Image 1: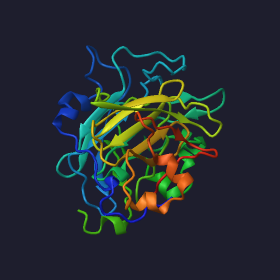
Image 2: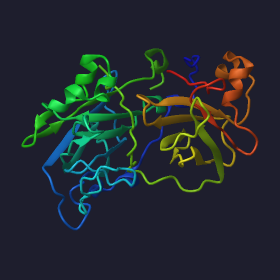
Image 3: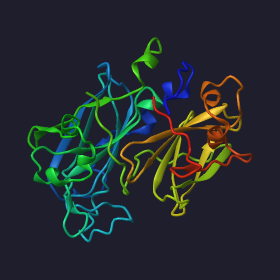
Length: 194
Length: 134
C-alpha cells in the first residue's frame, strides 16, 4: 500500500556511509590479489543523481560480478567455468562531490542459465540515495551484446526505454559510462524535506 | 528517466562487511506464500543501518538498538523479486502513527514485532506482510 503522508517517516532519511565503508583499493577489482585477473580490463564510471537531477554525494556504490569466464566466486554457483584465483568480483566506493563513481574491473563473462539460455555480461549494482526509499539494486549491461535480446531478466523491465537505461555506453578503450538516476520518494514527500 | 531495478539474484556479495552484533537482536524468517523459508534473501534495516542474508531455512538475525525507535524500516531483496520490498517493524504502537492508523487490525498485526523481538516476513498468502510504496 502507499504509505500515508508522513514528513517524519524513517524512509525519508537514510544511512550515510563514511570513508571507512570503502577504501581506495576497494574500487579496483583487478588489484585485490597477488596477480592480475584473466580477461579484458575495463573501467566503469558514471554519475548518480536523484530524480530532480541533483548529484547523490558521498554515498555507497557496491558491485558484484562473475569473472571473465562467467563464474561467480560464490559457493552456490554451479557453473563449471573456472574460478580465477586473482578475482573475487566484489567492489565498493563512495560517490564524490559531483555524485561520480568509478570502478576498474574485468568484463564479466556471459554464462549459461540452462542448456539453452545464457545471461549476457552484466555487473550487479547496489546504490543508496539520501533517503532509504531510494534504495536501488540493479544490473548494468554492455552495449552491443547480442545476448541482451533474449535475456529474461533484462526483459523483466517491460518498457524498452527504461530497459535501455540499464545498458552502458562507451567501449573498452575509452571506458564504459553508466549514469544512474535514483527513483523515489514521490515528489510530494520531498517538498521541503531537503 | 529513473534507472529501473533488477533482481538481486542468487550471488549477491555486498561489499560492506555485515553488521556486527548489536545490543539487541531481531530474529525471524522470510516465508513464501506456501510458508516455505526463502533462502538467500537480503534484509536491510534503518535506522541505524544493518543488514543480513537469510539462512537456507529463511531465518535471519539483525542487530537492533537496545531501545529502538517505535519502528524500523525494513527493505527486502530476494532472487526472483524484480524490485525490493519495503515494510516496517514496529516495536511499540504509537497511537497517532499514520500507517498503523490507516490499516485494519488484521493487516496491522503483520507489522508488529512479537515480544522478544521476533518478526516474520510473509511474501504472500493469507498472512501476507503489508508492503509499502513511496
